[in-house]
Length: 130
Image 1 (cartoon, helix red, strand yellow):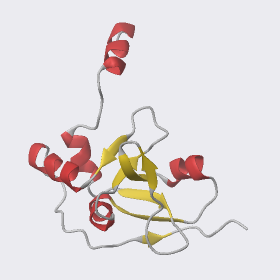
Image 2 (cartoon, rainbow, N blue to C red; image 1 turned 120 degrees about the horizontal axis):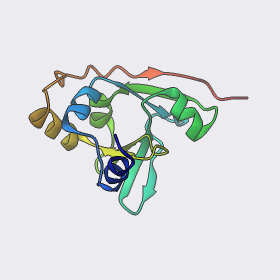
Image 3 (tube, rainbow, N blue to C red; image 1 turned 90 degrees about the vertical axis):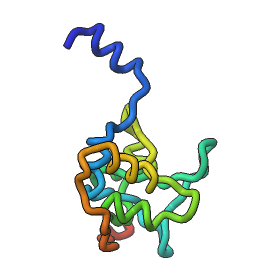
Image 4 (cartoon, rainbow, N blue to C red; image 1 turned 180 degrees about the horizontal axis):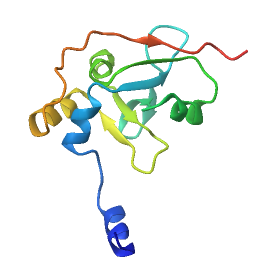
């Protein structure tokens, strides 16, 4: 790939491809766990979002030592409050927003990976650093 190709690729609006989203359906996403059940929601000009990460290392870079939880992307979008979307890897060069509609569209337009029958399995992770 030439330098020109790299520059052109960076200049294009980017987001996850349908195949990437379809593969993400069953992937674990990690997020900061609040004291009470639910999510830590951030208000943005684009609406409320929950920062989520594709690895706990990325979560640690964002939040430092913190209590955390994880679940699949499919389950996450069903658990989010109405009107709240997930912001995946917000510190990455190309973060993206994830919601139920985005995953549904990916399944219709992508490779159809994933069965969409999330079992609600949420893993409760690290404890408060003290």
